[in-house]
Amino acid sequence: MLRKRFEWKFRDKTLQLGERTLLVGVLNVTPDSFSDGGKFLDPDRAFAHAIELEESGADIIDIGAESTRPGAVRISEAEELRRLVPVLKRLRNKLTIPLSVDTYKAAVAEKALELGADIINDPSALTIDPDLARTAAQANAGLILNHMRGSPETWTKLPPLKDVIETIVKELDASMHRAMRAGLDRKQIVIDPGLGFGKRKEQNAEILAQLGVLARLEMPIMTGPSRKHFLARESQEGTEFATAAAVTACVLQGSHLVRVHDVKAMKPVVEVADEIVAIRPRVISSGSGGSNGCRAALPGSCGSAGRNLHMARLRGHRRGAPSGTIRARRAR
Image 1: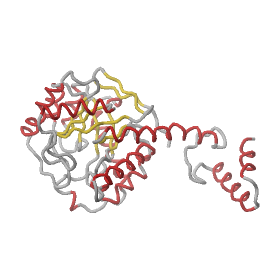
Image 2: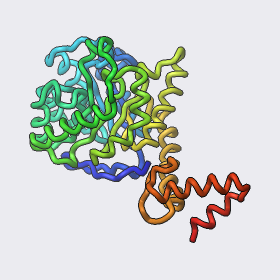
Image 3: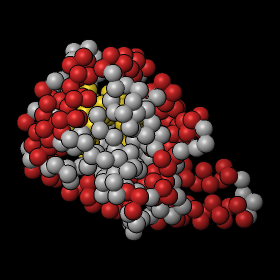
Image 4: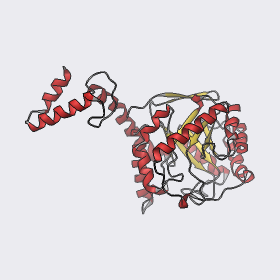
């Protein structure tokens, strides 16, 4: 699909979204995250990994101090700050890229923004603590609204959604308008469909396949497939390959940012996917049968022109006509 371009404005920064896919490097300072829990609890190790992520090509670093793995138990504001504050103090003015903090608590967000964070990544899309939107607005910060269904404690008990992508669109739209009513400008907001956040395993593949539907909201899109449970394979290497496949799907379906653990490994994956995205509009444009701006690749989905072209191809194939015959007709 064609990927619309946006300017993401927060604090004194502007990020261009859509020219290429931006990489958001994950830094978990937790003892129990599903992928790297405990590895970066020490502030010095967290600092070193943040520098490594930037040097590997991260465009943003996203720090989380509370796990949102399935079954995770919520922690107190004080405990989250105890883990987070030393790392933020260590990183202050040491990075040349924006710093995001993953939290749903307004008080934690406020402290993080005081200590130099530029973006708040709310895993609950304002459903747990709506005051977080006002906190972000007062600091002129960026805000990522991640769709979450239920809570980590209840995810395994939830039934599948009847219409997963339409539900996500509807609920993210409501969260987005809640944020704007709190004072945020539309250009400060990014949306995320929340892969794995209360969705059944098979529904995550459905979200990836229909990710382009989110474009209806006219907002930049971030996705976070990295090492999620629905991608898990028998080996760590297998899970990384599965992550690469999901990251590629995200980019081809219109993601502006992808959130990943291994920036170095995913950077070439994103670069190749971006090359495909850059070529597809030219291919679609040259074969659209006119200037109607049709984006679809499925026969018949571009209106009467698309259906006529599809039927002409079938007739030509049945009569043994060379494929160039169809191309010549379309060129007139």
